[in-house]
Length: 431
Image (tube, rainbow, N blue to C red; front, side):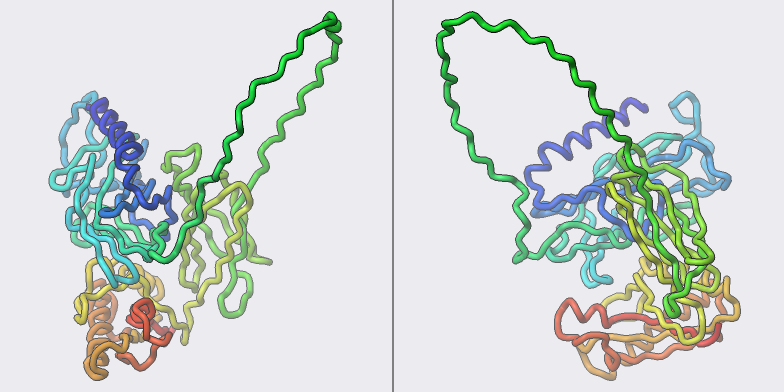
């Protein structure tokens, strides 16, 4: 059974590099990802053809069982007690890919439907054993040229107890607009004319060989240590902040991406941090400090030090932040399921800060009637408040107001600017 899966993985990788490659317009190897819902699955490559957006993904089951008795991903609930065909061992995980998955761009402005999957089931579940690696591909409708960041929303953890969905936010790819030319990466070579070497008849005996002393080879220099480093500061005062920086190696030249997370502390005097890194690798970093909103980022390390400073926004009265990844149905106030992870984080933040009260401010673009947009923005923030209340947050701690199109953050004229005005902002009224 294991040999069969390894053969299928090999066939998938070979197919990805041969026949399908001829139709690829743009390819992004190991794309930058702002946030991932499941650390055991990674996006290895994104190919764009004339018809499809193809995601080549990898799931790797952990080598050791977690302290948590619940399974890591997609295990039916309760835990099944079935024996596998692999030496009588029990499968640690089961995986599949939901056919209702979608790709979203520009805060939900457009969505792209799932087409098919290869080497992963979409209806039944596939057993995965400790240390086993599954390579699979999923096909979606072609993302419109010009959009170079997308979200993958496979399903909602909230609706699937005991499962972790393969959701990704902020996947960065190469997908230029039609009028944006890509640089020609193929160097043009001028053929060198072939000429026959001229030979001259030898009239004198060849000179005796001269003995030479071999020059000792120069020692090969050792690789210089590289690191990720920077400063953690207060976004308002620019003073150093003592924070915990949690990091994990996602992928690299000599890793499979299953490295456990580790953490360091920023310095008290200057707020500086430094993390030893491997060259040609990708790391996920999360910075947390008491009294501040946390920040996350994905860093790509080449062969030099990677500098990344973090300016943390304090949790104090008057602070305003825009809630990312909040999606509503078009011209409606129904929350889409892909909004739940962001709102769950907000609910957890309010639980950790029980004295904090907030005001939710809704905004729209200028399309449509003014009064209708004001009402729509009001209904949307009220829907966000209802969701937070369902997560155990006292509704009395949450004020709401709808401004409609009256407070734009840009000119509101282009298709690119309008979605930026359709937003939900949170203002801390009491900390």
